[in-house]
Length: 190
Image (tube, rainbow, N blue to C red; front, side, top):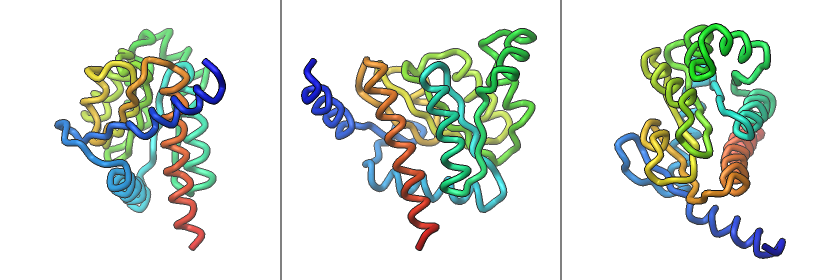
């Protein structure tokens, strides 16, 4: 694919983002983003934190966004992608349980889990969402690939990227999260 065709394809994918509430009700990008930013600010105002999780490229997005939300948007955030944490919990409980166990250790009722998975089928991400629900956390998901992926149906709000390409899905997730940081940061600067 030529570079200009790649960019055109990315723009097309970004224009076709699907956002749903728990239960599947669709939302438009603008109103959904306003609602979700309001929710994020509400969690922060109550003294709660954002918790980001992901595997591979999604782990990089999770770590990057935890820092950006903390530093730029001034919203306390963390990610569970520290090598020591992952290898300790993976060794003791199995990799499928690393995020669930991390939530059991660090999450508090009222925190917000942001679960990022290109496929929406990673067992450790799905188990973490279940754990977040048990603990009393809110959940926002970012997924792609198949429209029927289980992560897409599990959050209070769910962003879905209609693409089977890791590059397009990961870029889209990163853009959406950066957009939220930038919009919140701009509000603080007023």
